[in-house]
Length: 178
Image (cartoon, rainbow, N blue to C red; front, side, top):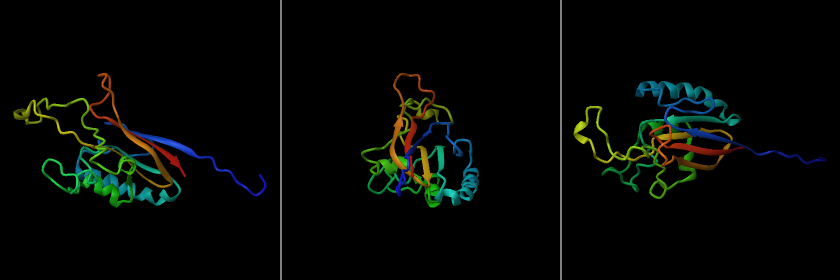
């Protein structure tokens, strides 16, 4: 090819569902306590230095909503902006929320992953007085990324067939590797 070069575009998909993760990622679900999650993020920061040339993914069930969803313009449960530590820590480490990158407006695209299966609270956890009340619907599963990636699409995926293997929806993000 005299004087020209060709570069093939590659795509990768990342999926996050309760207890599942892809690639060399850490799942927030396994790291139960806030201090364990902080330790996991500290460990991840060491790998972020390679993100200029190597894609880095942090995926999983974070068991908490996102500060990108709970904003002053998108009041929820009587609250405006809430700086949820489980989403601000990845953002402060330079990671991008792939779903919010693809769908910037939380009011028009909430992307709820909790819980497409459980619409009412079944009791337990010391809260039996709330049995039968609506189960909060929110986005608590994430695919965060850093590095030479472009988000092509990102969606919350579940099924109404009753055969979905989790009580969470999955986040399916398709990336182009740059």
